[in-house]
Length: 473
Ligand code: PNW
Image (cartoon, rainbow, N blue to C red; front, side, top):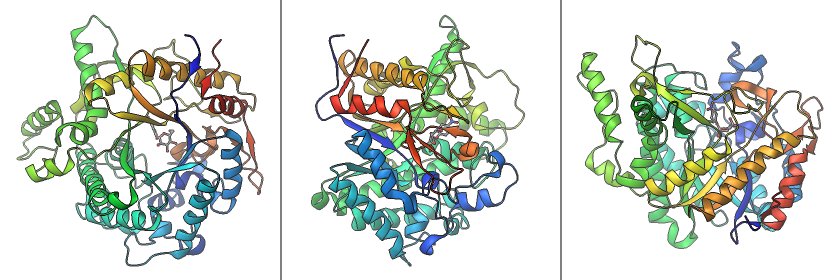
């Protein structure tokens, strides 16, 4: 490779999410979110029963975050809005002006620094009041989310031009409503994931249309959704069963959302046929996978202005081996992912470092979804606690990954427009609490001032951003 130049005006960012960094859980009129309730209930569902009550304190220390952003020289910053900070009961019936002021200050300061905000409307933290009425299990949340989205466009859209409606509907549906690992802790195997995903897809589409119909002409921005997916390879490349399981794995992970949105408004055919066949066998009169009406299909199709991908890891796939007695998303998928022992593990057990998996996934997205513009809206590597500041190993992972992104752009022709490191700061890593550290900046959670210190990775990342170029060796 000649030089490691990235395309002109490539977006270099870092990402965060409101609940993971802000703290101020009840400050200035903020309403409760499901993560407030979930963490306050204890019960060892989160590492050491930690909470996001204080987190990185970004609700008050946001200027410290801006210094980090400046130090990295980022062109973009991705953060999420706390829905219940803006609308304490989730509806526009009452607007918390202090919450609006907070995000106004943040957005204005970013723009003054010439940093483009990429704003996520929803990153796992449903207002508790909305959850009390069913949350994503309820069809009513679709219209409520649409109202919230319109409120955000009209309040911030004069300055925010890049929007993500929902972060990782796959994680929300599977962890929050199927397996009950994430807030609100609903466990409903075989039903929860499909029902919640169905409502999220409709909510996303409504929010996109709201922008398209009422805001786009004037505000001239773009709206998408952030989809996470592993890359997947057959465990035995010569086994037909493993190859088919691999197809199903990608279908149940990425295509579940990406096919309706980017292709034709409907779920993948295999999901429809498999789940309906199994549902019949189980004696059900309707499929556990809900159906879209024709009108809904038309509404959902084409509702993303670019592709936002969150990539962390890769799996080797074989057909599901465990015999499960009750129906579940996993048994419907009929595939399981194995970690190759050769792949280095980062500080969290599910994340093996597989840089080439990202390149393959980018090529797959290019071919499958009509060569869209792609933003990698999350990618990163954790250290476990206690982390080391001189994280040369971890920077190696970032470097290898960025090399693969360059290959995807140059050799495979993928339209990758930007890369956002997860995360700007060490933060509340959901059920792993503060034990898993994804930050480019270290946060000392033991000190009340929550000081931020750059890791070696931050300094190196800043060089890449500055030169728009990887220094290859
Ligand atoms: C993403 N998994 O979630 C989220 O968008 C971030 O909020 C989070 O901090 C980041 O990835 C790192 O985990 C995920 O278990 C949560 O496979 C869990 C998984 C993947 C992504």
